[in-house]
View 1 (cartoon, rainbow, N blue to C red):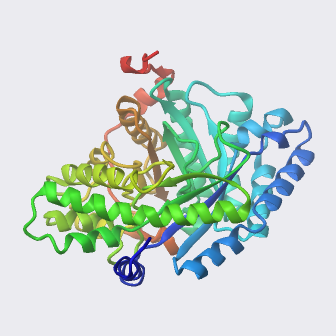
View 2: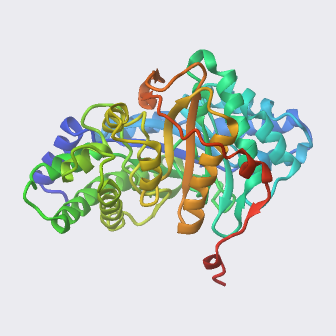
View 3: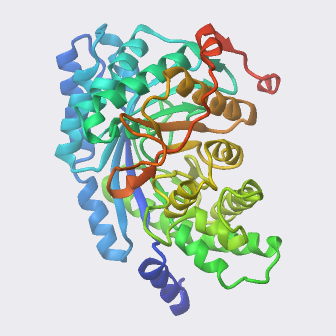
Amino acid sequence: MLDLYEINETLSMINNQHLDIRTITMGISLLDCADSSVEACCRKIYDKITTKAKHLVEVGERISATYGIPIVNKRISVTPIALVAAACNTRDLVPFALTLERAACECGVNFLGGFSALVQKGNTPSDDALIRSIPEALARTSHVCSSVNIGSTKAGINMDAVRTMGEIIKKTADLTADNGSIGCAKLVVFCNAVEDNPFMAGAFHGVGEADCVINVGVSGPGVVKCALEDMKDADLGEIAECIKRTAFKITRMGQLVATEASKQLGARFGIVDLSLAPTPEVGDSVAYILEEMGLSSVGSCGTTAALALLNDAVKKGGVMASSRVGGLSGAFIPVSEDAGMIAAARSGALTIEKLEAMTCVCSVGLDMIAIPGDTPASTISGIIADEAAIGMVNQKTTAVRVIPVVGGKVGDTVSFGGLLGEAPIMPVNGADCSKLISRGGIIPAPLHSLKN
């Protein structure tokens, strides 16, 4: 039972330290919507989503009002559309994206993820059709998010898909150039993608999941930062203990919301994702946590070590507070969505190379990074390959969400609005990697993948 002190502490976290539930995400299986007719398949998809998620927003708002807990986003994830559309034998999957957009608007959700393909070991015709459809699909929709998994520890890295995704990102940027190339902010390229991720833009509903589940993503970087402000003379072991205790409190709130939402929506309780998800608001920043530990600026020497401590302590504390932990569960470092990261990138203290090093120890990868619009597709593919290699070898999820801003130069700033924030355009290594990327083929899985 909560005592008065714990209640007051939680209220302070919500009112003063930006504590919130970042998202309630309903995962919906569309496997039973498959049909040889595109029109019939799209109709089934729309009907199932709007039936299952009809009350999602309403329930989220009711829980928020009942418990006084801010719930920022209500979202939907669906079975990767490349799987569902395979029965249609069509080369154009844009109609599926438009169907998802209509369903998202009808349900009133913020985003809908799952315009996705899983090609870590090779492509089917449906996968190829979906990937080719991504630029137009994201240009013609506002709520639909897309992801492609191009590698895994078990399968290796599909370098043909890596090469293609560099080109797709460039085309998506071109088609949304009039809006800061925002289409790329809704597109993620994964290695070791998980089936129960509640966070966009990479959420999809895995084939191993139940028909309808509720996954919750928590937030709370501001809470952790405030807790560390009282530990000026503490050693790093004591700081880790403080973060563990704080993560426990944050996750317990996520557990409560997930339990209530599942009950009221008649869906299975999936997971609570422990990830610390920042926002552009001052004070709600993962970078500020690292600086509170003793860094003059995130990006300085010692940043990766501090982030490793943070990520580990968040997981250790959170796993004790929830019966079902999953998703990505770590500390996010999206540049445009974190006020401290934005400041460090502007000052030059934080570079893409340092961010890549940081992704070795946290979730998820190179996230929401704006780069010059004239960056070659092969260079973007090289960035994807590097990040996928980190994920493959370290048996963790990594991803790339970069935005080549058409017409943008290093030092410019592009604004996306809302939680997507704004990003300074960062320099990219100009050395040519096109010959490596053009070779294609498969980078074999590492030896430690042979565990059976």
